[in-house]
Image 1 (cartoon, one colour):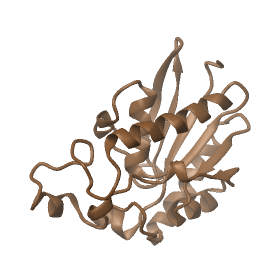
Image 2 (tube, rainbow, N blue to C red):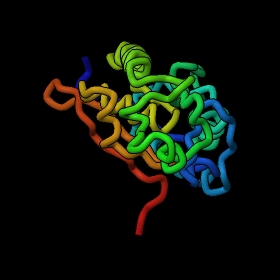
Image 3 (cartoon, rainbow, N blue to C red):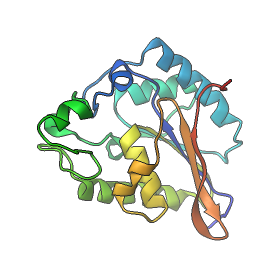
Length: 198
């Protein structure tokens, strides 16, 4: 394994549903004007990472596809495995709305009726990371996707249960970088914003 290898996780830019906290899995919601600016800015930042001939994999959702296009990161492959968590009956609802009927609900600790459970996300994240790791001897990898699923990827990269993804916020348009330190998997950069702050 090349210990300089990196996996970059890029979350799509802002959508109206992301801005208002609605759980967005299967629903196609376009980027806002700010989301388009974020996607372009993050692409510029990622290109400055000087990645090695990166393989670029993208979720099939249009918000992720548009983010990759605006970022100047042409995909090698669209992959269903990078889709966002399937929220089932909770699609389009906010956490406070869900908690009216299920107190203390979080996607990390409770089921999504009609959708995916954390155990299913565990299997999917491990499959994605296995493919990414198979490339790292020769090239880096960029995964363009979504908030909750990318947070689950971070947790599994760090050999934590999917539920620990709750500790790794990932803002719209932001990116994180997974890598190695002294042979162990490591979170090199986290939730890097698309635009310089200040």
